[in-house]
Figure 1 (spheres, rainbow, N blue to C red):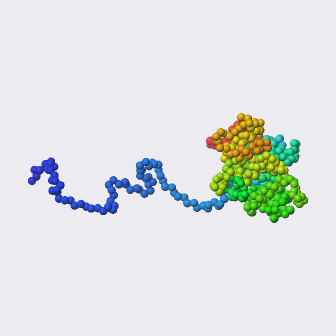
Figure 2 (figure 1 turned 90 degrees about the vertical axis):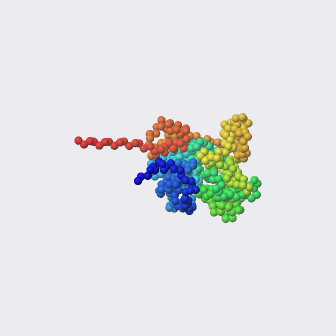
Figure 3 (figure 1 turned 180 degrees about the vertical axis):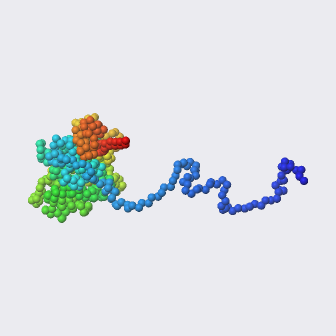
Length: 503
C-alpha cells in the first residue's frame, strides 16, 4: 500500500536541534600527512623550464646554463702579452714591389723622391727592433717588407742630420737641436721617430730611445729612494737595466769600437782596454748598479777630451739621438708612492728627470745631437699644465711676447703644477715645437700607389680618386689613409652565361 506522505511534505518537516542528533565521531589526522591540499599548486613536470610567476617577477624565459668545463691547456705566463705585442714585419702573400729603393744617406735628402715609399734597410731591422721602434698596431704586416713614405718633414729632418754631422751646406757640426713633436692622432709621430732612428744608424750616431714613457710612471717597475736626497729622489733599477740592454743591442758595433776615456773608480773590473760595451754590460746582470753604469756610460758618450793617462785609444764621440715617445706621461704624478703614501711626481724619478733636464737651456749633448720628444694622442693623460706649456711655446715661436695679453696663461682659479711650467720656461730659445700635419695630395698619391702595387688596392689611382680619399682622411692624415688603403675591394665576378637550349 502506498504511503500518503509525499516528498514535498517530508521536506517541510523541521530539523531537530543539534543536541538531539547523535554525536558524530571526529577523525583525527596527523600533521605530517601526505595528502595533497585542495588548493595547492600542481606539481611541476620534469623537463619543463617554465616557473611559477611570483609578485613582480620577470616574465622572460629562464633556462639553466650548461656549465662548460675548460679542458684546454691554460696559456703560459707571459704568453698572452707576447702575442699582444707581437710584431710581424713581412707578409709573404703581398706582392713584391720591383725597383723599390731603400732609405739611405743619399735618398733621405733627395727631394725628387718626395711622396714615394722607401724600404727600411734589411741590415737595420734588428737594430730597430732592439730599440722598439715598431709598434704592434702599425700596418707592417700588410706588405712584403717594411717601408716608410718620404714626406716633407722627413726630408727636412734628413738635412738636419747632415748639418749636425758636418756634411752638406750650412753645416753646424756639434749643434744640439731640441724638438717636441705634436700632431693629430694618426699623423705619423711614432713613425717620424722611427725614421729618425734609421737616419741615426745610417750616420753612425749613438741612438738612445724611450719607446713608451708611460712604462716609467705606471708603477710596474721596481723603485727605491736614494739616500741623502732632499727632496727625496727615486731610482728605477729595472728600467735602467732594460735601457742599457736596448742600447747595447742597437749600438753594439759603435760601443765596441770606443774605449774607456774617463776614470771610473767604482768599477774595479774596467781596464784602459775596456770598451763602452763592456761598461754597459755591467748593468745587465746586476740592476743594483745599473743607474751608476748608465751615468758612467753617459759621461763617456758626452766626453770631449780624455782623462789624464787615457789619451792613447781616445776617439771623438759621435753625436747622439735621444727619442722619447709619450712625453705627456711625465708631466703628472706617477703611480708610485712614498713612505707617507703620497704620490711621487714624475720629475722626482731620477731616470725621468735625466731626460727632461736635456730639454733645458745649455748644450746637454756636448758632441752635438738631436732630441726628439713626441706626444701621443691615442694614449694621453692630457695634463692641462703641459697643454698650456705647449701653447706658450707655440706663441713664443710665433713672436708673441710673454707680456702680451694674447700670451696663453693658465685658467684662473685653477691649481697649476709650477714644475711643469718652470721646466718649459727655462728652455725658451733652444726648444722647438714641430706640428705634424697630413700629407699633401702628391704625397698621398704616392702612398696610395704603394698600396696598389702591393696588391691591397684594386682600384684606379687617379687624381679624382686621390682627392676623394684625401678629403675623407681629414686632409691627408696618414693613419686614416692607411685605413682606406687596406680595404681590399675585389671586382665582382661576371655572371656565367646560361647554357644554350638543346634543339
